[in-house]
Amino acid sequence: MRTPDPVAHGEAGAPLILAVCHQKGGVGKATTVANLGVALAELGQRVLILDFDPQGSLTISLGLDPEDLSGATVYEAVILPASDAHHCPLPA
Image 1: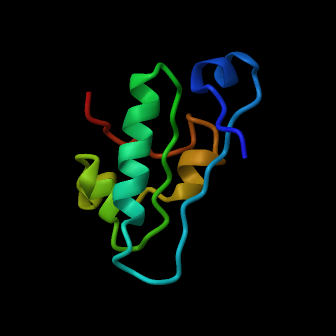
Image 2: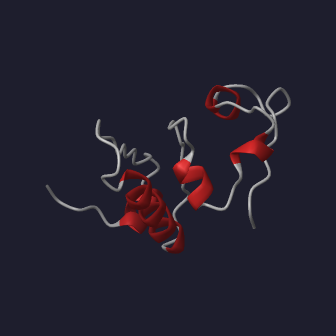
Image 3: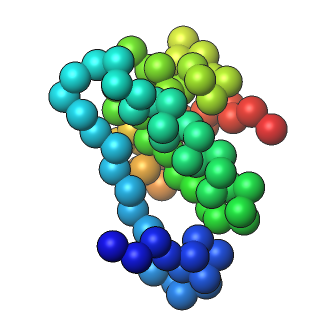
């Protein structure tokens, strides 16, 4: 499989969708996603990271406290219009 140039891929207009999943816990999923997201952002790519884990390990590793998210759900953040969704504070 050819590894795409991240900058060139973003310019093409089609989003690159990556999913990191494994049934077993403790295999480095959150660490992999956090590091990959930061690396792509540093290359100038727009990055959206969704944490579906009820424990919120990825959310915590990115500097957010799940308790401060006012009960916001992934559905509200992704599907609902901004005016209807809870607004979550993100670190600068």
